[in-house]
Image (tube, rainbow, N blue to C red; front, side, top):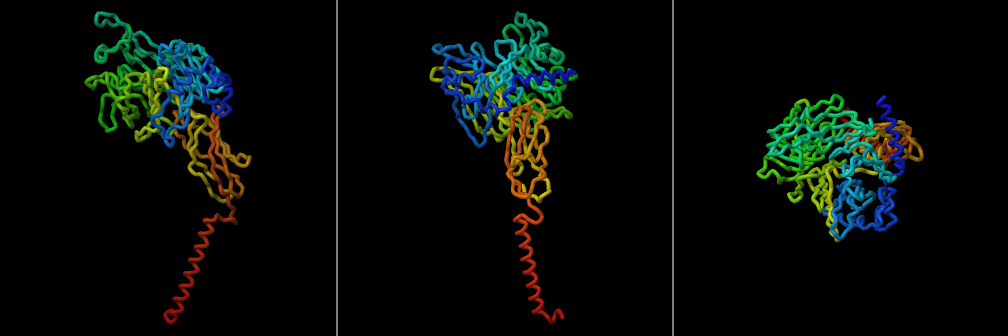
Length: 556
């Protein structure tokens, strides 16, 4: 019954928000310019002039842009404005869609606060929150329809389950009070809470079972937030929907916790401090056992089964002489749940000048590169590096001529394509008539879904569909290796199209040729081979005849 209800609500969401997604994604939305007529593409509030929007485009400055290696898709960014006294302060933050060249494709601004935590919940719809407001909202990038929900936003991050149509949030709870330096403090922890579409609480993980207040740990890393002890300061959630597992990053305790949603149990805790949870043994890339792989991190996400990426702020690193000054890194690690170990598998150390003690984001992109965000107000940085750690794309938001500066948020960027991506194993095939062609290819969906995705794959040519099959793409934006068998092609050379269509109707295409020959019309290379063999046989026959004629008596 719950599954059927989820499907019905999901269909409602699909109809309401996806509406125009069977067009070519957001490709019909024109690039934003100075011309006021284009400002109507911003759906939340229409600007009276384009001054600050123009300044956003003006501020985007590329330091590095290798178009042969960098991500070719689009990016959703949350960007806040830091105006000076001479510039109107009636627009505080943007949710902007930008391309790889710094063009603002679409977006909107909030007149009294900053949008945060953007996350795609389908191919065209973004879940986001507003910093000073209590509930979450949805925005369709194509139709510019916004829908406020009754779901509480909690703090720092929100996640979504597309199969149950429910949401996760972080709920700050008081665990106890504690007297410290002649003051009484509330000790604040973070429960994980699941809400339905109407904002009703339907599930809760109690943090106190795994992270009860530890006085000794508090005095080792002593952090307070206003009048409270910020015991956990959890700042990211990731829901592996297929496995029904939840991952939460706990910044203050330098750890990531895995929670089994079905049983409400803590599966493991990875990090410097593990509380009452099952502990993983940690190893760096050199195979050495270490106390922690990161310090006061942000944005832990899955890359695949037991594989993760995290933004290591390296703040409050108690192994340093000054724990408040570190070096920001992007770190990937893999967990072995049988051996109960976690091993760092890849890392990139940002230049010292990029250091961020708070905020930030990191993502593994489908092209194998890593994106990271450095929230250095008033000039934040966006960086993409390849597997070798070389910078292939780097953009800074410069302070403008009007002294407008910028700020970004934690978990502040999402990437996507306008259509599924395809890489063919072969660009041409040559077979006999009646022999099926197994077309191999790799595919990626348009964005990072938390669950396996059903797609329709077709091979077309000359107005006909020669093959059609329902296949699945792996979750977490992993590369999926697929094969579709094509048969029934008549003799001749065919220019064919391979299509991959996702649930929202967005379709990726790649092209290949098929040379189909009959048994009586041999391929050219086979004909050449046959002629060569005949010539060799004739030459050998002539040689044998000549040799025998010269040595006739010997053979007699």
